[in-house]
Image (cartoon, rainbow, N blue to C red; front, side):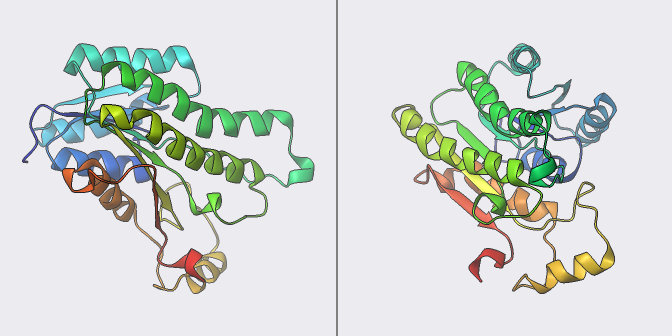
Length: 244
């Protein structure tokens, strides 16, 4: 573990991609702040990290609510004093046909997926030193369309816009802002029939679903010094899907 006394906050870290990311960052030597909606989930992940000798903090947080996000970073500051890496990973993707989509459906997805990036990044910057990293988990749905996910596609496209604009504002502070856009990943939330899974894999040139660790590896690179000259970019990790 080469890194000492640096702290990473990962939202949506109770399971799936977020859990893989926070575990990978911990393996790199970061203190880990595990944030998610479910207290039991974040507690389990934090205990797993602590059992491996990592300093970890579990915080229940609805990232769409400013007061809860303020508490997340207040608790982080109390425990660790600073934040060096913020990974905005929390997101939802409820399938709803556009003509049946309610305003409440739209608002919830935009609040959880997009507004949260604004709130979390703003709060993190209050305790992020020069050389920090903001890494946002976007999606290939920000580049191509998916039926039933108009609100999700819009939210992820918005994240890409935040990445480019915020990178410019934070460059003088040597804080980089980048993103990772996953394709089809094996996660608890990505449930489908075996036939649908086969059709998805058929569309992927590398002929397999991605694993949460594939996304975590890209995040580790963007969090490292090896990416110090990269900012305002979104790396697509999709097995070649969007190259077709």
